[in-house]
Structures are given as C-alpha cells and as structure tokens.
Image 1 (cartoon, rainbow over the protein chains, first blue to last red):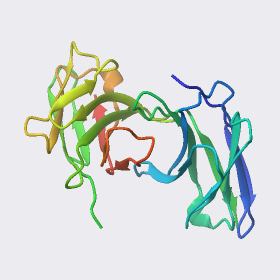
Image 2 (image 1 turned 135 degrees about the horizontal axis):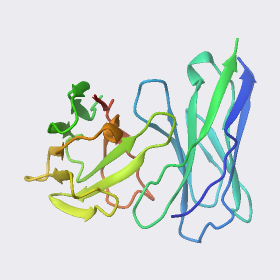
Image 3 (image 1 turned 180 degrees about the horizontal axis):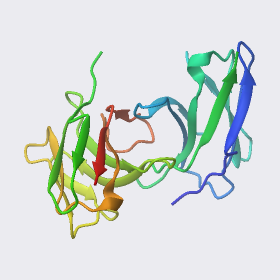
Image 4 (image 1 turned 120 degrees about the vertical axis):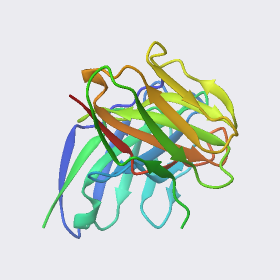
Length: 108
Length: 116
C-alpha cells in the first residue's frame, strides 16, 4: 500500500489558519492525494483530493509540492467544529487505505 | 441530502454468537466498501464490491466473516462466531465510480460492535 506520514497530533487556535502536513515520498505518477476527516463518533468525511495542481473547495485548500512527495491541507479559518482526525491518503489500485491520521485540536 | 444508511447503530453480543450488519448505499452508487475501525486507529478496508461482485476481500477474515451484496444494492456483513477482538466500529461507504481517483467515498455513521 502507498504510505503517507502525518504528525500524530496538532493544535491550532480558533479563527486562525491551519496547515496539516503529509509526506508521501513513494507516490507514483497515477496516485491521487485524498484528504478525509473524521469527527468524533462519525464516519469519515471527504475533504478534498488532487493529482498535481493545487485545489480549492468550500472546505479547504490542498497544496501539492512540485515533486508530489508532500502535500499540505489548509483550513483557512479554523472553527471548533474542525476538531477531528484528518487522514491523508494515496489512492492506488482502486482503494482508499487509511493510516492513523493527525488529530487536530482547536483551542478557543 | 442522500446518505449511506447503516443498522444497527449499536450491537452488544457475547462471544461465539453471530452478528450481522446492514448497509444501504446512496442510490446509484455501484461501489460499496466495508471498513473496520478499532478504537484509536484508522479504518481498515475489509471488502469492496462493484455491483454484486467482490472486487477485493483480501483483508476479510474469511473463517468467520462473510459479506454479500446479492442484488447489487444493499449489503450485509456477517460475523460468526464473534470474538472479543471483533469489538470495533464497522463502517460502510459507497462511491459512484469504481476508481476512487476521481470520486469520493460517502460513509455511513457506522455500527459499533461490543463483544463481551
């Protein structure tokens, strides 16, 4: 399985931007980068995905390094509702395989 | 908004008993996934269906777990007999297309199993 590395946990203050890093040095040319998040007691929720170019949607932005060996999920203005586990995933062979993710704590 | 439906939401059983979980994906979604999530870990893929066919069940413990999607719509995951280590959240997800590279997975709220 394609491997990603994320920090176990991060903290951020409410109403400030959050940058969640992900390393994926073994990424192949056809692997997409996906981000999902899981709020307490809920199933995972799609956040964003991309291949090579940076992507923006209503939830977040995804910045992909030029060599594609790392990426950053950007929450532009964190709220308490953004406290969750964030998973960075490489989709390969038609599968979404989760790692341990980053637990994001938002401080009021 | 369309959702993936799962039941039961919670299940408590004794070891060696049989348990079953049901999932109804979003209408029109041909691909269905079952994941298992142990507390504190990320979800682990158990089985993937495309319509009624199994695409991948390499991580499904086939001595006690079975999954079916007979008409290519809803699906059932069964455990028989349940063991203490099966205590986990069982998550169902669906997607419109087989290849998740261009699509997203929609997850249900999960079925939490406790084996005593």
